Length: 215
Image 1 (cartoon, rainbow, N blue to C red):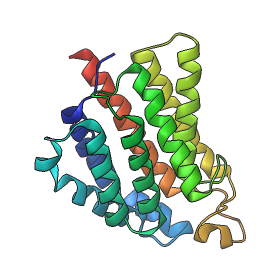
Image 2: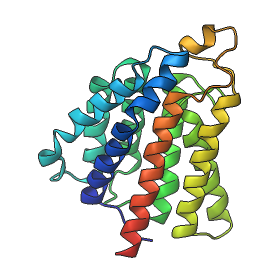
Image 3: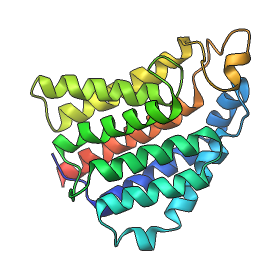
């Protein structure tokens, strides 16, 4: 499988931001149904602030890049998402100390570090109808694929499928956090918007790694 270094990771951030931006109406509508309606605006603002630093980001090592992503997302994304994304990226900075690339082995490390940080900081677990659900399912899918000896495109396909499964599953989950948990229906029947934007990022991450493999 190809290796994702700093340059490719910044390209991934740009592509993830594009996908989130293109779906602004959809994500905002989802959030308005069960929440405050500001999730898309908050996520978009965070990515804009992060990518405004592109010229300085390209000169960083991978752990330093993750640390800068964490600090920027923590201050640039409103609501709980900012704290959770910030914590996830700061965990990546520690996990990737001394590493220059994200490779096959690094995928599991990447997903696990973020999931553990979000669970700890957000006091959430899988099944709580949050951004964690697609991330955690992607982690489980990658772990299973690696145990079966899969790598490269097969591993990335497992990542994508797991993220999609986790995102879609939130529609049937009762909310345990946020405004949706105060609704009589607990948001059942509605996708969690945070899970949707997380799936966008995981999908784009897998696609970028696959692109790096083909080069």
